Image (cartoon, rainbow over all chains, first blue to last red; front, top):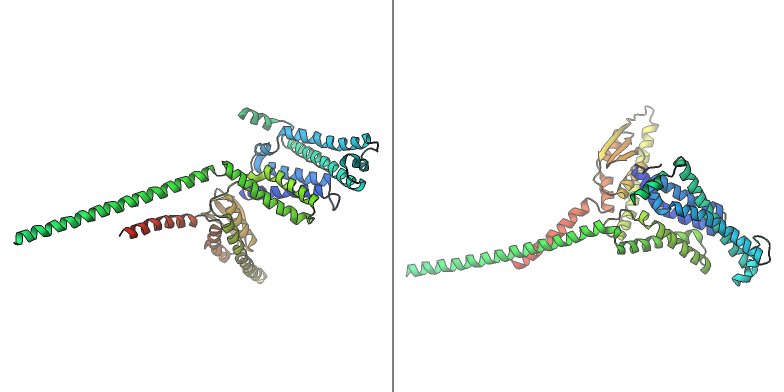
Length: 156
Length: 240
């Protein structure tokens, strides 16, 4: 279990910079089809920002931002978005992840539908990667025990 | 005749004294009233500070300010100003500002934020000047054949109060060549200095005063006191 850092400089700089790291992660995620980046990279940066929060502010404080339930939900919901868009293309008589066929329900031309489809898939990948990164980090740092979660439950 | 004159004089003097007494009582009353008024204002201010970020208005304000900051950051990063990307940026900034507004504005003190930013911008050239001069000094010190350095650790207690001003001071010290902040523990700075002169410059406390001026700490409180007293004095002068 990781406690609150006692270094005031690291804590303050972390708390000032975390929002910008997270926004940068979303920028990398959303601009994946124009510039370097994409779902996995954005998700990793987003996960890293939460890991930074855990390292500096302790796991109890970080749980207020991203609870265990949210991690579980995001990791499965991200996969669901990815698989759901793929299956939607399959339903619309295309191949799996053949985004061009999404134009039938999005009411735009095929090229635009491809762009939007990639954005949706990458959002799913990003969410899943973020949640899995954070959950791996928490599991390693707490030696596989879910002690912090139990503690907060007792306090409430 | 003289007796009546004496009695008259005594009478008038009594009258004058009576008038002076009532005047002074009135003055005291106004003074007390003013003091209680300033005290109530101060109490209200302290309550506001204590409630601070907890109150609803503070929360909305924090979210709005952090949203604006993040949206500007997004526009700088993205560089695409069409409707689709602006909408994406709007949604993302709103999400992040809801998630992290209490991180960005954890220990906000009273005072005008615009003034703080203005003072901080004015502080940067001074810091640059300090960095350049101590750069030359350290270079001279190190390049001398004998290398007359005298490394030691300086410990001092700061008068600054908030974490952000501590960090600003610590990073300013580290940025200046010759001195490095090693640790901050309970308001005590542990600083490694390369030379006696560098350490003396640090101990003179000019940098600390400037940081206190930026974040309106320590000195700011005394200024508030003077302003309160000035109101009481002006009222008193009016009555006199």
